[in-house]
Length: 479
View 1 (cartoon, rainbow, N blue to C red):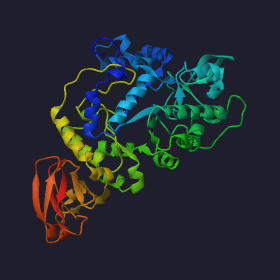
View 2 (cartoon, helix red, strand yellow; view 1 turned 180 degrees about the vertical axis):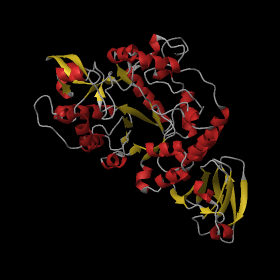
View 3 (cartoon, helix red, strand yellow; view 1 turned 30 degrees about the vertical axis):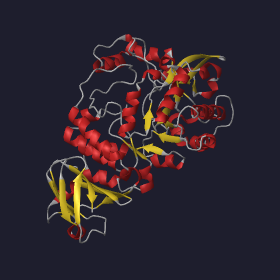
View 4 (cartoon, one colour; view 1 turned 180 degrees about the horizontal axis):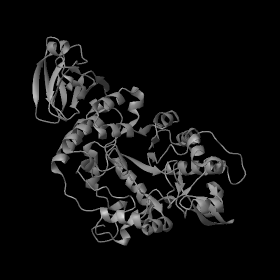
């Protein structure tokens, strides 16, 4: 709500809030749920008893108007009227640009809302079904009204789960649908600086065939298209917006495929899963991937699909995981409320969330971490994964350590995390060869710790560390 009691629009977002984001070093702001949704999807969200019970567990004082429907059941790619429409969106983007920030919005390629205009005007854009399909799989199909009369159309889905009943599935084997979707992408790209493409692996040809088989043949009788959609669509957008950025939400080991098809960045759910499982060696193995792949990976500890980090990670593990997730190469992706330690994971079908106290200690940690990330060293520098050697024979705790360095124009960082449940020791060979005969200061950017070491000793034996469980250092190395 705005201060005068009306529904707040994008124009009501305070300048001071945007200033604070810029000062923290954020380059992008992602507005999730900006597009116009409709009553059809909202009705579905309010009518499923199990869904509503889930909402009540997250928002005990739930009101009917709090159930706003899924932001991924899009009726129209225009900014929602409640937020001020496209004009307010344009003004908001200008306000971000004045602060050196870019605007990221959503594109949902797999499905539309049931009341999207295409459903009535172009049912051939969708995966159709028969009366038998509807009778046999009522959880995957529904009957809709179109200009050609009633039709059976499939709910949006992926190959592993039943359909999402507040959506309808579009058909990427249809030339007409592809042309229409590219048109939407070209238009949206004039309203923002980048798009996060939801479940971007679902339009891949093999995924379509695995999910839909022969039902994916175009309903208008035209030849089926089986070439990758993104290879066709992304160059079209960049032909008009050369610097436009595409981010893919992607799973199932298809990250590399989508990078090769033109995405600038791809979700790194594997790193998240390995951090969440608290297995140091699997995290380290993941960080041995090709450097270019890593630079284009999106690192996160929570998002709208995952549990809140403050709830799923104990405090000490949370901080250690954050040092690893956000100080390695790639795009660093923070969820609203993460810095304050929000713990309640609220459904995207809700327009309100419960009040929660700020975790001041966690917030102070994140502010320190963001100050490190704001510097040019981890933004523009060269990154290197480092070896961690046993401090003495039979000491296996070195296997819990993950260490890496950054260097940029003579400035250096060295980070080390004991990502394990036991006190650990190790030696870390430093990657620099100009330290001999010089005193080296190690100043921890996340604590007040500061140490002086012999450069010659660092070069020959390495840096000795003895850290508690889940302990970490992020040293600025001064020679």
